[in-house]
Structures are given as structure tokens and as C-alpha cells.
Amino acid sequence: MLTLLSWGPEGWLDEIMSGVLVTVSLALSTLPVGLALGFLVALAKQSSEPNLRKAGNIYTTIFRGLPELLTLFLIYFGVALPLFTYLFPNSGDQFTSFIAGMIALAFVFSSYASEVFLSAFRAIPRGQYEGGYAIGLSHARTMWLIILPQLVRIALPGLSNLWLILLKDTSLVSAIGLSDILRQTSIAARVTKEPFLLFGFACLVYLLLAMISSIGIGGIEKWTNRREATK
Image 1 (cartoon, one colour):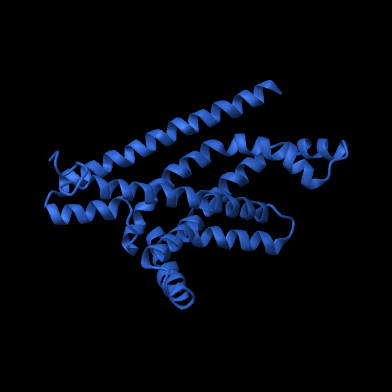
Image 2: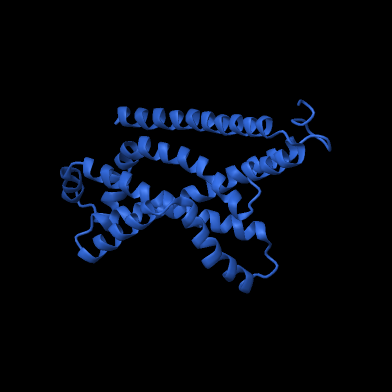
């Protein structure tokens, strides 16, 4: 068992750790895209323009209603694979799978993040906006200097949970051939005939990533609370 979980030609730790790198890279690449999309959708859903509100509601209904795996398949087989095969024939399957996974997970993440942002917007008193306008700030500067710092602090707990869900959902990309933790572990399990050992080790890896994330999120929350207390 120790030999199977060791480095070198007789062990599979090299391959599993390369899968960890792919998993973390995919999650970190998806996060800023998902946050930006979620913020824009939240702005649309609280807009005074009816068409924007309707578009935001349709977006969240679609991507919250579809299973994540089905969304991934639709984007990979319907968009990414034919597009990249035509435009970049030598890009490779791993690149195509990575981009498709990032886009699909960003859509799903943003649909839930938009609800977190929307709740945070509603928790900020209207007087905060009026105070910014009263001292001569434009709408954009009021959002940047007054609203966004409060929005981040309020939305952080909900976004933290979504990050942990995103980290776990990266395992879905193994279905389209990306060499993440789950795919590398599946290959090792088939070759060695030791599925319980290797999948159990994969569980420990995911739990370790979640623990590291929780420590980092706790540090960010303490930092935002200290900044709020000093104001």
C-alpha cells in the first residue's frame, strides 16, 4: 500500500499530485470569472430596467436548474470541442477540457453567487448611497468607496461556502477527460485493482484542500472585520 502511494515509477503519488495541481488551477481560474459574472448578474437583477431584471432571473433559473454535469457536457460537446477543434486544431484535449470546465463551472458558480451578492446589496441601507451622493460622489465612486467594502464583508460567508462547493465540483471535469484528482485516481485504481485505497486517499486530499481553504477564508474574514472595526 505504501508503495502505491509513493513517488517514482512504482507509485502513483506523482500522477495524483499532478491532478491536485490541475484541480487547484481550475478552481482558482474559475473563481474570478464566476465572481465577476455573479456580480454583474446581481446588478442586473436589482436594476430599474425590467429587461435587465428579466435577463438576470432567466440566467440564474437556467444555471441553477440544470445539473452541473449536464451543463459541463453541453458546453464541452456543443461549444468548446467543435470551436477549439476548428480554431486551434493542435491545442490538445487537456486544454479544451480545461477551458470548457472553467466556463461551465463559472456559469454555475455565478448563478449562485449572484443571489449572495443580491442579498448583500439588500442588506446595505439606502442611506449609504444617499450619504455618498450628498458629499458629491458619483454613483461609480459611491459604489467603489462605500458600497463595495461593505458588500464584500456581508457576502463573504456565502461566497466562502460557494468556493468549497466549487472546489468539489471540479471533480466533474474528469468526465470530459481532464486529468484532475479524480481522473488520475480512477486510472490508478483500475491499474492497481486497489480502488478503496486510492479513492480513500483522494478523499483525504479533497479534505486537506478544504481545510486549507477554511484557514485562508478565516484569515480573510478576520482581516475584513478588523478593517471594519478600525473605521
